[in-house]
Amino acid sequence: MFRKKAVKPSGPLTQEVLRDWLMGYLADHLKIAKADIDTGTTFESYGLDSRVAVQVSGALEKVVERRLSPGLLYEHQTIDDLSGYLAKELRLPEQAV
Amino acid sequence: MGAFDFPTAPDAQFEKFLEQSAAIEGERLQAAVPKDYFEPRVWRGVLGFAVSWLVYAGAIVGVAYSPHWALYLPLWIVAGLGGWGLHCIAHDAGHGSFSRNRKLNTAIGHLSLLPLAYPFHAWRHVHNMHHSSTNHLELDTDWRPLPAGMYARMPLRQKAVYLATRTWAFWGGTVNYWLESAFRPGFYPKEGHRRDVKRSIAFVLAVTLPYLAALVYFTGWSGILLYFAMPWLATHAWFSATTLMHHSASDIPYLTAEHWTRNASRLLVTTDYVYPKWLLFLTHNISIHTAHHVAPVIPFYNLPKAQQALKQKYPGMVREEVFSFRQMWQIVRHLHFYDTESGFYSDASGSKVPPKPSDPKLTEAVR
Image (tube, chains in turn orange, blue):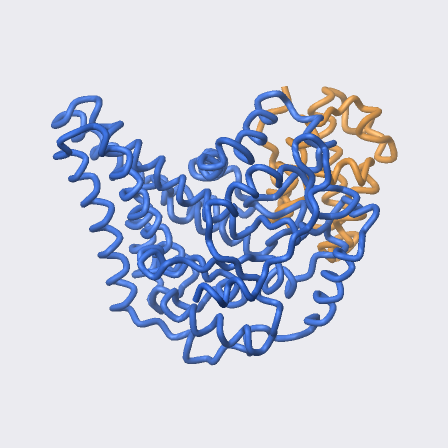
């Protein structure tokens, strides 16, 4: 299932790195190629339920090294939206300089 | 950061809270407390540590020599008071207010949390999360109420735990907190914290397992129940009741990211309790809690003076109640869910709980 340990991205955290990490996480869960993930499609459309949302949020906390609201994935429902929101909150650059 | 948009229909009481919150915005609250009060006196902390260990161990020896089983329950409650007092010493150690020596604080913290079998760094890091998000509807780690709609979507086991620990089993609320945070390094977002937690877990196991084995060897299997498990549970009962009462009041809202501010979370959302003097001594002033949230570095024996200084600087803002079992009953009877309309509470039947402010005259009359 979706319980395997998520690998933390190496190097400085940017919006692009977060986006890529979320794509990899979702691709692993859905057992599809990362290239097939559409970052504008809602998590719900991919069939993610509340249990998986909690797991994603838990894994994401370790990537950004801070606690996140349990409601985050409901409020920001696509990878683009979520990575954009987190980048803004954490003041991350869009890409590594 | 947040994702909720509550309350949907804030009333005058909520607006009044926001006005108070706005009034202290930008203030340096700590400045109200004279700097001398931040200085630890290590001997006083060590005295508290020794007293609480004596209470804990004395009550357990009392159970061993008790002439009748009817005395077990009161003795366990006393052992729990000792264990809770030790937690309060660990609390100072965790905030760096036991001493200025980090190694001493770490050692005292680890030793003090043994009756709870709580790895010190696990407790310390989760407690710091509570301090950095006190009464935050999404991020507080302590007694954060859930909106009834969110509760309805939870799995059955989680529902049962939530409702029980807010009602009849409130005394076990921190057992759940312990299960979630004590032996699960994965609970902690920061890698450094996970490393700390693993070291503390190793310490607790290295001491507790041989201790339990010795208890079984010398006193039989029942010894684990009589001399460890029941005092452990009683300590949790003190832990749960105290923290629930500090952070649950019908007129104090939990706040979404939109309304939560650091200053309000420190000064306006905690209830202090007036205890009898002997209880204040044995619980190391833990019930004088707002001053602690304003400046966690104040050692426990300076909290009464710090509370007075805060009251003078911010009249009417430090919320205080006289401790009573009635008050505890009101909390577990009514304060079950976060009311998404008012921002305060609703009960298990779905009815809004009318906010009831504390009465400063009553508190003063008891002093």
